[in-house]
Figure 1 (cartoon, one colour):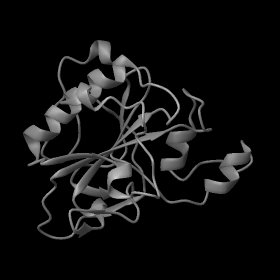
Figure 2: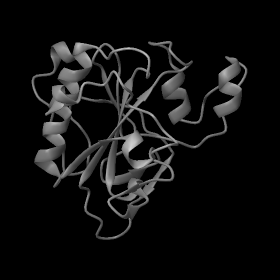
Figure 3: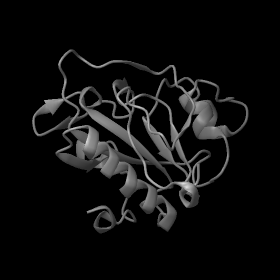
Figure 4: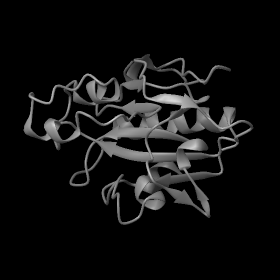
Length: 182
């Protein structure tokens, strides 16, 4: 669904956003019992790198990426990764994993002494890269999604992947405008 047609975003009791296209990823599992979801992790992704609008991200998150389709894909096709959400450059919102489940987006990570950030976070991927600015439509949907998540979960931290995996990850990158989501 594009940003122009989204009147509001709400997260239902099952962890699904009403305004998102649902493409379920097998790369998910249960959160540890009694885990409070209190963090959002913002990422960027483009497949192939620095190319937008294709199916590569969806194929990666659903284990359908063809390693022959692009030289870079041969390096990553075997990965088992996912995120809760993807916001395309057009503002389209796609959900891969219920917020009630653990998506596999953070990898080796820690925040304020807590390790395994996937356990207590919601991952949001922005279609983009470290080398250029994100689109206004993406910020509009991101703001709406954050508000919906804050209404449903006790979100206390909104961080970048680089904050929870410093030295290993750089996203959402230097062009992400943190002021646009505060």
